[in-house]
Length: 577
Image (cartoon, rainbow, N blue to C red; front, side):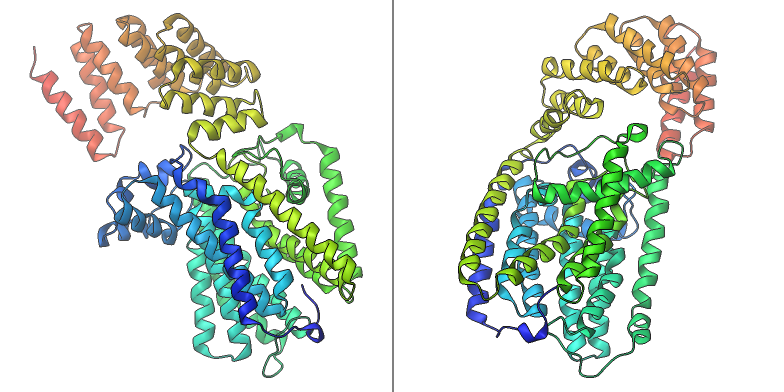
């Protein structure tokens, strides 16, 4: 990770204060525009502005609810607690929610600098790594996206846990050990990505025992004891990991082997490991989502990823004695990126910018310390390296500022995804929906058409197109779109239902009855379809059939509110001739 203990530099508090101030100024300057941004339509609604519990602000009742709540397959009560605090203090003003994200990122930058400087005794390289972390464009997603508060908070506790572990190493006590465990648990309950934290601690232990850090234990400690003291952390990681897997599966986010085969997952992992490294050096073409290639996986890229992993690992092992920071940084990257590399496929993206927030630190350490070692004692190369480092930092800061602008609102965010992946059906459909929400229906239609043209084999794109056409008053094309979806996926009740609503609103009750009947035939428990079918049947004078559908709807739901609605309708119909 760093120079040996023999290369330790004296602690200079004034220098560290100056560096800390510079890091704060740099970070705030890059991210200040986010304070004028709005919420976006991806997860911000689920976590904040459409979340009934969070909108009520902080109280014992709302906090108790968040302790057991799972959102989109994620269990992170500490993060949700922070959203409760924000709403209690600021209401639903997005500016202040962004301000909290920025504040946490600034704290993370300072903690990283303090962490590296204390562990290595090298404030210069530590400052440069912290600067790269502060302004790298890949990290914009974690800062500018309010819903990614979980990433920021979990990292804060990650860094705090490592600093506390340093204190524990220098003077082991039960209280200090419990403090490390507490930081880890808080981080784990902010985001489950911290499951690899105890492995990172063992990596740190190895660096300490090898004399590669500016840190010493009061007395030697056997490795069996070092592993044993981390067993509670491994147990917590296992518990949260299993909970997350079951929660993701329950939310439909954990993808099965039928689409994401074992070979696809391995190929994705190999390609992804190379993707993050390539984007570290050339962070261009960034967007909120990236389409998964599935069966069209680029085998050449996967093979290149495999060769890259083997080659870098071999070099790091070969140079482990003379350049130990290479192996430390590389292993740090591999360990921290492992949970999100794609073997367990969550969602539909093969990789994501936010997943690089912590893993890239290991690569930053390896590269920065390599340059620092190469230029040590050589004045001219050191000046050149410093100038190059400043230029790289400023270039990354410019790129981060440009990337930040894409997070201004939902339309800008979705437009960026289309610019990066033109014609890709998810990106086009998401932009279409964002434009509709912004009241720009005419601009939205071409994007729904583009999605349907690029992926005509998917029922969902035709349903989305049909919905947009219906809103635009283009009933004929909308009907055609819904029927196309029904032909592609007969087992999907949604196009039947949407067609039924369109025909019902148009006064074609016979056609609406047929469409709603098709929806409940496909899905007998489709409550809304049965209710609409009952209404259409009553309109054409088939009162007894309408009552039968209401009774069936009541029997097929356990929702007390839905049952109360049915009871109200039944009472009304039975009281009429």
